[in-house]
Length: 590
Image (cartoon, rainbow, N blue to C red):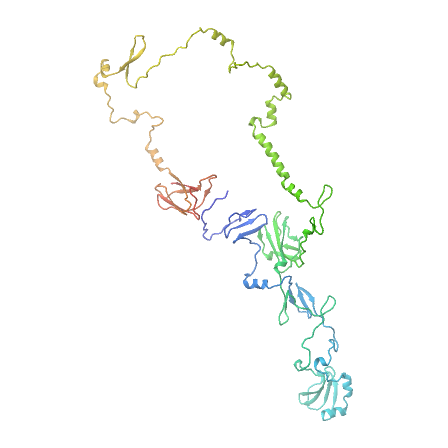
């Protein structure tokens, strides 16, 4: 039985050691904000804050701010996690590299771009080889206005430093024609060149790739569950409605470390798994997430330990439409009603009969009650079959025996009855010896004498009679001096002259000192339904008192409240809530 405390307890910053939170199968009635308990049905810690809250299902990390909540609410339903990949053409979806674009190929024109696409519609369609063949000395002199001193063909990087020799260098890799125009200055005078994108006119504003399929590379659109920034970062949103929290309970064997989930999966490495040992959350650094369906602990458990795994599982499915009505009688696909020989749905009438019938437990309880009522109604000596048989003399033919005994009874005669005592022959003889008309002697009534010193006389019949009160003359006539007929009590006499009795006893000084030193007690009912501070006047004359407060009604539990020793004759009791009228009784001993 717990001790009720009627005021708050100030532990003065001391620790509470080996404490357990109250364990209940159902929530306590009339809870106040701040109340906590451990639910033994769900194995969860619950706290009351205008409603019961699962204290284990809270955000475990940095403060969950309004900004984070708004960000979470902005994530579309069914979103997945998408990250930037370091592999060209890939993105990461839920941590997995996924190819979303592949360059169509390589070569001189993998995109099929023509001159008009880049604003070079007036350029002739000539290959580098054709251009090289057309570079005759006459043409070069015509276009340059002079004859170069030398023409060299090679890689662009191999042309060396310019010296001003007026020689030409044709780069076969970059398709450019260079003139050694001055010291350290090569001047491009022809060939293929790099053109700034802004300088190209007539180019299309966008290039639309083909739509990607399972077998074709192409473009994709950013849907409701994805966002993309200007720098190309693709992000995914998560919908909390698509997540469910699952739990699996284990009873550990001695030394067990490894555990496997059998009801679902979780994403490893993202804090989606929480583990509780005997109701206490285990730190994440003690858990190793070995796979999406398994985990292990660094230390083995003891046999019988209760382990609870709570994990978040992603669900991304379309909800199955509710169609139960289609299978009822009259629906599109009805299930037949069950019969004695075929299974099926239970009819409403049968369900009503079933609801009103006894369960096995109820039937057993009713039979047990009837038997107990039958036994409890019998005397203690006849409440078993063995006792009943013994009372009938263990006679299997008891009915016949009783019938035979009744056959020998004396018939009752009208107007006569049976005596409670046997009328013996001796009583008959005594009755016959009494004379007819004899009477029982009755002594005449007397008048009681008054309480005094009386004389005794005799009447004419020799009977003792009252002779009157004794007077002083009667005493002196006996030769007793007159002065001896008056008693004078002495002013003092020794205690030995007094004979103690049951109601008169001597008390010694030592006994009186012991009695005066004994503690005294004061008790009183307290509480008026209003006051939370109650002054109790005990008048014991000391502050060395012991105070006990208990319930005024059964089971008379002792309760705890604040108590102030106000002075030698009063104490003050303090309550958080005013006690009802006469709810408690206080006893002060001191």
